[in-house]
Image (cartoon, rainbow, N blue to C red; front, side):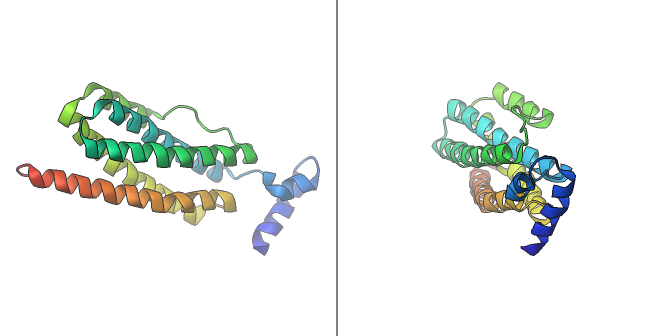
Amino acid sequence: GPKSHTESLQSASGASGAPGATASGAAKLSAADKKAMMDMAVANMAEVETGKLALSKSQNAEVKTFAQQMIDDHGKALSELQTLAQAKGVTLPTELDAKHKAMSAKLEKLSGDAFDKEYMKQAGLNDHKATHAKLQKISKSAKDADVKAAADKTLPTVEQHLKAAQQMSSAKSGTTSGK
C-alpha cells in the first residue's frame, strides 16, 4: 500500500546508489525482519534434517510418510526463503542452532519405537507448535511485505503438519496403556 511506498522513499534517502534500487525491493530489511528470515530458515532446515533422519531410521510407514512430507514441504519453504534472502541481501544460516543440533543428536542415538516416539514428539509436535507461534508473530510484526508473505504462506502448511502430528500421537497413545 501507500505506507510501504513512503517507507521505501524514506530509506532511499539514506541509501547509496540509485534510488531505483531501493524502490525495487532491495531496501534494507530491519534487524527484526532479518532475524525472522533466519528463524524461519532454521525451522525449515531442522524439519528437513530430522525428516531425513526419520526416513533412514524409522520402520513405521506412517512416521516415514510424515517425515517425507516434512522434507518436501519444508524443503520447498526453505528454497523459497533462500530466493527471497538473495533478493533482500540477507545471508541465511547454513547450519542448525544449538537447540536443534541437540535434538538431532538425541534422535541419532535412538532407534525403533523409541525413535518414532521422540521424533513425533519433538519434530512433529513441539517444533511445529513453536514454529507456528513464531510464524504468527512474524506475520503480525514483519515490516517487510515479502517477509510477512513468506510467514503467511508457511502458516497453513505448519498447521496441517501439527494436526497430522497430533492425530498420530493421539492414535499412538490410544493403543498403549496410560498416556
